Image 1 (tube, rainbow, N blue to C red):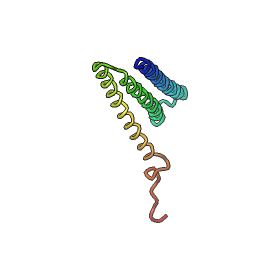
Image 2: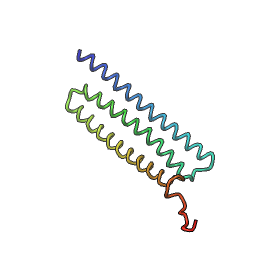
Image 3: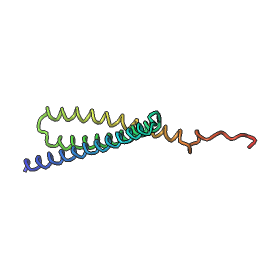
Image 4: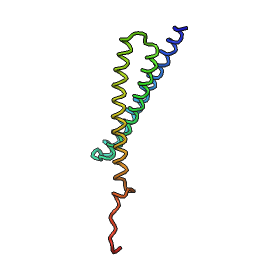
Length: 131
């Protein structure tokens, strides 16, 4: 019975990792397409568009990292040795660290984007007292 559980868990972990690779590949393809469009259109100096591309790719990476972490959790259920558990713990810690900082950067960028958007109070011209 244990062997069946281990086999199922390994297949599940591998499937989740394949999903993570697919998500990261989709994000990379999307980002490369958008960069290519910028270069072709000659708008490579648009800082907001570059930031939007980075944010989009970062979101895909973050989702992929979450899937990778899920695969690590599944594998930890079938790792019988302390050595394997230690390796998984280090990998999970690194992925969690990366995810935390990517999520923080995305949140900060969203805050900046809304602070300088055309509809925000900071972007509106001040009204005159006589008007």
